[in-house]
Length: 194
Image 1 (cartoon, rainbow, N blue to C red):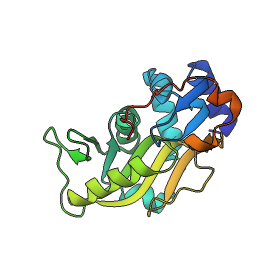
Image 2 (image 1 turned 180 degrees about the vertical axis):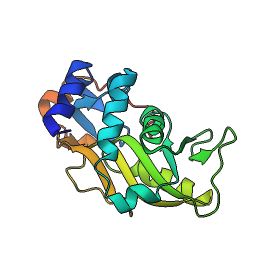
Image 3 (image 1 turned 60 degrees about the vertical axis):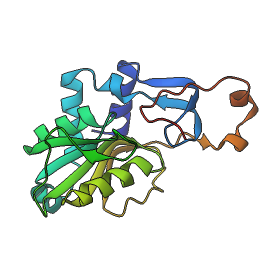
Image 4 (image 1 turned 90 degrees about the vertical axis):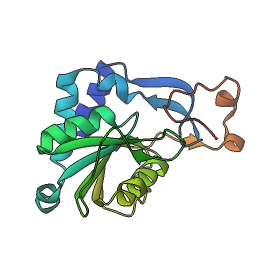
């Protein structure tokens, strides 16, 4: 799937939003990708997961034993990645502010895990999820996301495979352009801001 085909999926589902958004990373942007909307169609979610799985080198793909994603945003794409790879999928969540496996999810010691997200901007959630997976006994061999918003700059400490890389500018609070500063920010993400 080419970048324009991926963006067409986002546009068709009205998942590419414009305005003033406070991202879960704490940065501001005039664009927001609402992956929940692009993933609300099971057929579209399955197509995107299959396309994302096709970006993995064969040797990585055949090693993956489990898929783990961070809740909330990664749950749907994580489930679809499990289906595409024919392995179990589970998620970590933050009941007390720190990611952990719950709901009876378990990793066997040394399980080779793919950590998958919907969107990566700074990589903070991804690194936190990887830490939780490792604490639960898994070995993260790769990470993946539908969208890399870091313009290729993110370092997750493992090979990272995004379906598409987009470089919408993001801004710290003290760097806001006048047009963004003039409108209140909407907080569309699932993570509480600091």
